[in-house]
Image (cartoon, rainbow, N blue to C red; front, side, top):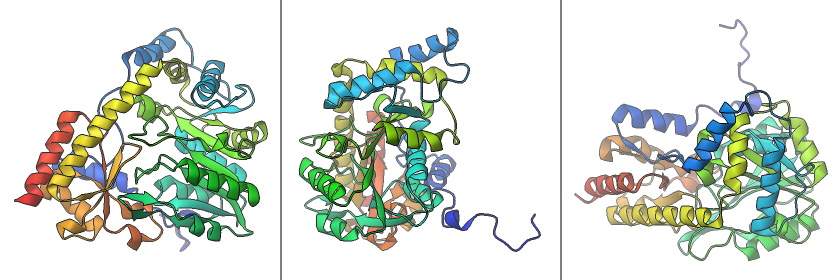
Length: 394
């Protein structure tokens, strides 16, 4: 125990304690509940991709430190993916950086590009690591709130424009958006791009759910829009697309000077990671379009199972256009405190969910909303839906 009265945790991180995911996952274990809180699949991804990792291990590829920027095979595969899917020409040698998942990529980008006192605009509710990474970089986070309208959460472009000041350095964009399931439209992204060019802002885009867009939604990488190629750091990863979240393989694509800047910070975080898995992900990215189409269709069917079950139980269900999360409003159930609701839900219904308020600076704005993950086996989702129906309609 320290003899000093000074707090052990530095003031930048003092507001961040144990994540809600750890709390709720522990609650799921203790109560034997179905865990629809944390966003990880309950099945593994393609067998041929898993076997590629085993083959790399056996062949001695990646068992020692891989190259700092990532193995050439994966960087080439990432570049080919960007070209094939979006028409983005990317140099694998100077414009791709492999990271320990998207979370490290976000941290490295913010540490590299944000000076103490710079303002970073992010759309709330936002993934909890965003706030912590902005704090670690010494930046000031400026939330612009997505608000429900017409069954989905929407961006107010006027509010975004008003949030930009002379101190704004960077926009942190997430689309498809966790936790709301919103996919920013081409029109919204075009307006964001025009604002970034007008005010000379950098943009970091988290696109880890790029292959999970549903119905009539379209994923448009911001880097494809006029004026954005040289100012956008695009981040994605293998975990969500191939259902190997434990492998922690992510990547950055951007202009050479931005990639070099992000690498300067990244090399002092993990340095390198996930050696054998990099070879497997290189093969995964080259899978035929039929894989990505089948993956999306499977998740769409699961979305519909859970959405219908939540509606039957009495929740108000927002339209999920992307990701594998559904946001609900608990007020039709006579509830208004998402934290209290989620902490009681395991005993009440045998299901675990996440209160959306943890993703807000303005906690009151997210108070009545609760997030459920549908990246689980269909029979698990059906079981959870029945448990919720029994708990709230009897």
